[in-house]
Image (cartoon, rainbow, N blue to C red; front, side, top):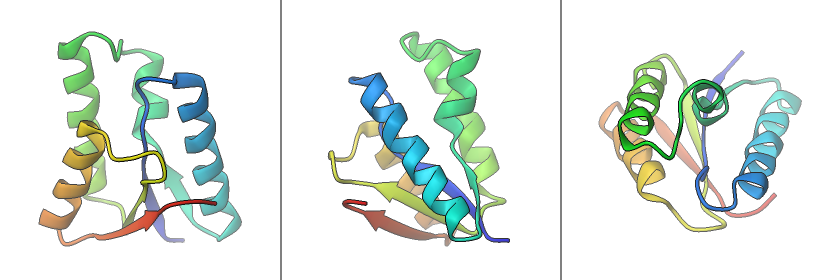
Length: 103
């Protein structure tokens, strides 16, 4: 089962952005993959509006990215600074970054 790192916006319109990430995770499962959406997990106990906690969450996600096979980046609403950081990290690790504009 391929492990997919889900990269999409969180801040801003959180309700919409969570829905987008849920749809990406569902799409991954429907394709027989195991999704990992760090912004779902870490925002449950870290406050994304506190810079220090946001940094911890992003850093934790980047550690787990090493174990993923691909990164799926939803770019249909633009690329946030956090997404750019994740996408750049993926490329440095030699991971495939699949850019998704719509689904």
